[in-house]
Image (cartoon, rainbow, N blue to C red):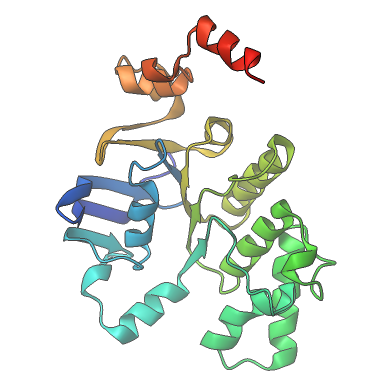
Length: 266
């Protein structure tokens, strides 16, 4: 792919086991600097587990994860702190602190990792909220925000320290199509404006079509394919074709007689 040459993330032979079961099995891939890399798959395929391992929240059974050229699994405490300053994480449920205002939530990473004056921290937090379209929400509390606004506040907090990489866990989960489309455009805006690298976990095909530069398809704890949207849409693999055509599993296809019985019992 032209424009994306340098690897900023390298995952090598990653294995994650729980009680003898492989959640991730020999996962290997690279993420290019400046691209939006989407990890796609059905619920329970290991997407979020992989993401949490990449940000250092989970320790894999074996394998290596290189980010910025360093194996993050071998970092000491001091180096881990420095590494986390260079990345941002947007959690599926936004993970905002309800006891803090939106502004205080966004300011928290700056307050924790710098010695800047309170007035400077507030200015920086307000700038980040403006960036995501929440300029008037600094003094509001998370309970006063809609689901989409909470997601945007989560992105503002992830951007607080001007990271080079942002990780998104199901950013469109629980949102209506219009709000979800706005969030997709925001993710693109972050890339275009700041040259950010983004790793996005999702199963939302509509979002994928808007944001993805490359897509990694996970299935049964393994990587099934990696490629652009156009490449994957041409795939002959039965699972990939099923996923991209939204075809249900045979056991989830109900007969007309069962449907009539259900209606009759209502």
